[in-house]
Amino acid sequence: MRTALIALAFGCTAARSVPAEPVDLAAAAREAVQHAWNGYHRYAWGHDELKPLTRTARDWAAEPLLITPVDALDTLILLGLAPEAEEARAYIDAHLSFDKDVEVKNFEIVIRVLGGLLSAHELTGDPRLLALADDLGRRLLPVFDSPTRMPYVKINLRTGKTSNAKSNPAEIGTLLLEFGTLARLTGNDLYYRKAKTALVELFSRRSKIGLFGDEIDVETGAWLSRESHIGGGIDSFYEYLIKAWLLFGDEDCKRMFDETIAAVNHWVADESHDGLWYGVVDMETGRRIRTEYGALEAFFPAVLVLAGDLDRARRLEESSFRMWTSGRTEADVFDYSTMRPTHPTWPLRPEIAESAFYLAAATREPRWNAMGHRFMRDIDACCRIEAGYTVLDDVKTGEQGDLMPSFFLAETLKYLWLLGAPDAIDLHKLVFNTEAHPFIIPSRR
Ligand code: DMJ
Image 1 (cartoon, helix red, strand yellow):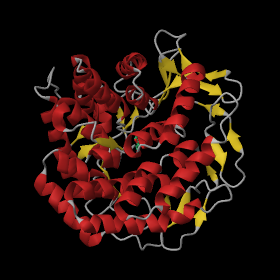
Image 2: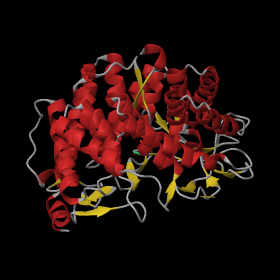
Image 3: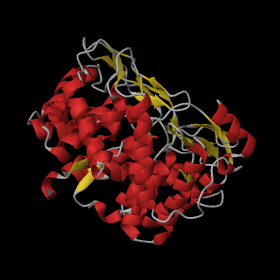
């Protein structure tokens, strides 16, 4: 509370003295990882996430699933934080169990926990991490037992009881990288087939103009919302179509991606407001509904880079950066016709840094690294507190909330570090899942 008041009183850039240019972005991001990890370690160890303002812990359900350590483990490994990584790995090995009477969101558990276990297994060779992933994958399989074979939203890890048929393309179509990698590593092809079938079923429900809504009933297959965009509820579905092709060479996914990206660029892209943006349109008619973009949408330049469309990728990242610099950081929802936030929260999201990293890797242009400096500086100024980093409840005032989401360690700081150390990985040899967990491309091992 006190920190929030200080930020409000002085504006968050004045709340902490900030050097004009950090000397080294990779070093700054690595130090930030250490600070964030220390806060989690000190105040929330053994729990899912840290609440850094109150220095307490948050669990997603009645029993913790070690979300932060699992999500952060490959970041600790990649950044060379060996003692921290070893402690996290050993703790996960000894304490993580999925035999719990808890209901979880399939999508979140797949991208953060299944993804984190699989990438950490590939990086360390630890067989216990693969055994945990296999156990989790088996427990999650009943989600696909709907009349349409598209997954339910929630599942009880012990009983396998599923619930919530109201889903969306992101939650249905962001499973193939993890289940496919699990299939490859275990030899159990069922994992691949279930996730791929769900993706194909979803694709078969596209509108006549090739667009998808942002809510669908997985029991009836009927669309519950006709709003089409590149933001939350659809976003990573696009990402997995092209990444499943890159990771597994799946040509069906490439065909689905090519058709979809053409429709999105035709209908959803909006060049009428000073720069390239992507708004919200009706999936059946293409009629524009809102001029809203936001922090989640900022992942799209990365997808455009993977698609080889550097022109759109550059222009959209420049728009995202204008969104960022119009506040203290970026907003979750931003109206690009007024250049004002319509939903001013910012939960330490990674997407804008992720896209800057892909652009830097593809073009080697220094401006993306310069953007990374700005992101790191603003995050330090607005979100860094004694116990870690915390979300912003209002990017206009700098008012802080009380959570350090696990993706801040898994993604945001990893991508900032990579922006500063672009040669640390080879993007031709691995594919990042939507939570920034790297999977090795089997044909390039
Ligand atoms: C992450 O969990 C993933 O990047 C997901 O695809 C979208 N939301 C968060 C980060 O913003």
